[in-house]
Length: 459
Ligand code: TRP
Image (cartoon, rainbow, N blue to C red; front, side, top):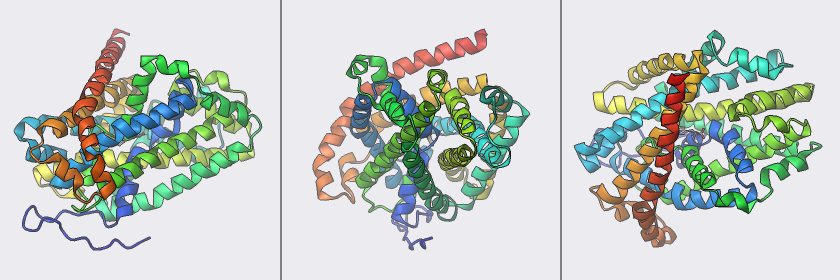
């Protein structure tokens, strides 16, 4: 483990000393940890396979570059500039009118973590079962039995305890250290699994299903909208997670380079996960299960495949669910950190008390999702879809039009010459492209969320 270098407080005489990331890689890995999560390991490859394969992947990369990276730069800039958590940061740079946006970020983080932790609990359980009893012969029935009720509650609570334990300890000793150990582990596992999957009989068909380019799909606006939503979700944008992590950065870091590194790493893991998932499913002839619900495929089709492979399946399945759990925990850390740091800043509370207090409240709220997966789906739809998109829209409008700082100068601080040349382009995208594009996504997210709410209370 590399020793954190001593970092000086960059704004002497201003706010009281804030703990900073000890190393550049500590920050980058923590941010990648936030981005890489359950969304990468299954949702990306699924959306890609349905949305035009390789053609989709190309469009997705373009969206990351043109929309994802600029929006991430917005969050990073605001965090680094103020060294404050979202609520304080927006108040500081925008005035009181922007406080509600910060509050929305905290509420969104709270709600997402409450059900994210339930799903993460399932992955922990599958990993543990791979060691103890192996994968169930009837994966559908097994998933039905463990996904809600008391069985789900225990693992949800265990996962929350882990998350609280890390956030409680602090930025360098908790979050940074966890990321430095966990993220390289995850990269190695996913890479190893992708190489192994290549050797499976039937792998070629899996790759074909995943990547066969179909340009017609790209004419479908739904596909493009899903690609955008997936890009924002996967990069953890729209609720101040990147903002909060950047608030622990010293003023002279090159944000642009880091935004590109984070986005690329997130994409690479998502892409590689697809290279594992589809060969496995096709090697065992389970492709008809792919079209069912996305969660179902992850927790039913894949475990079924691992079970059918016998002994080796147990090892591979263990690694796969471990990687999922690792991705989930580093994402959960950033969700809890948004909430915790806001409580620390707003109420001058000690970190330990804030992390435990809020963590317990989130764990309790998560019980609703743990007892009933319909609730889980609803909260996902409202917070994970709708609130994130509203947050992203607010953030782009704020940085593009209302921030009381010279945004271009702030972006240029610490940037290399090459990036300085494209800052006008980035600003143009933030002002003129992001808000209308996100508003378009929001329009549909609103319809979907309302429909989901109607379904929930109607049935
Ligand atoms: N990016 C995470 C994933 O791919 C999920 C996520 C969305 C998230 N928004 C977030 C994680 C905010 C942490 C913070 O699974």
